[in-house]
Image 1 (cartoon, rainbow, N blue to C red):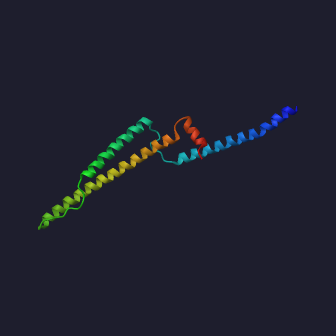
Image 2 (image 1 turned 60 degrees about the vertical axis):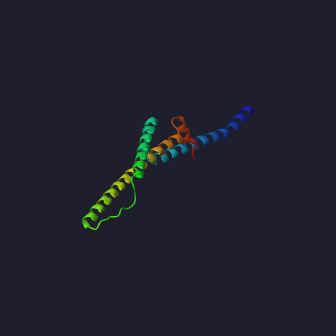
Image 3 (image 1 turned 90 degrees about the vertical axis):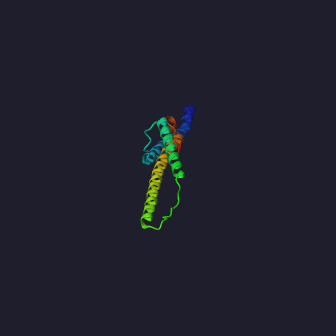
Amino acid sequence: MRVERRRAGSTLPLLLVLLLLVGAGGWNYWRNLQVEAKEPRPYAGYSDRDLAALIDAYRNEVDRLEGRSAARPGGAARAAGPLLGERLAAYERVRRASARRRKMETELAGQEGILRRLEREQQIRRERGRGWRLHLHRLVTI
């Protein structure tokens, strides 16, 4: 009888610690799930292969736009010529070139923003993993 009581008495603290760990793990999992749900992830539904293909395509587009931007001469041009008509024509050329450059830079900034969001999604997937690794990450990450 005494031996059985000692065994039962010695397992009670272990059982309490185990119950505490399970409760804390469940709470941590739920908390991490709530944090993930608040984070905007528009590309979460894409497969890893599709995400990698999108990143490559956007990188190529950003490189192309950066190449075009670097190839264009910058700086202000002077409107030369004594006649008002010549000066107005030169002004219009400069204004159109400036508008094209601004449009291209705006497009480049948009493409870079999308590329950053795609790369962030890929980074999240690497950090958290998939399947069991994702569940383990939610369970133990503070």
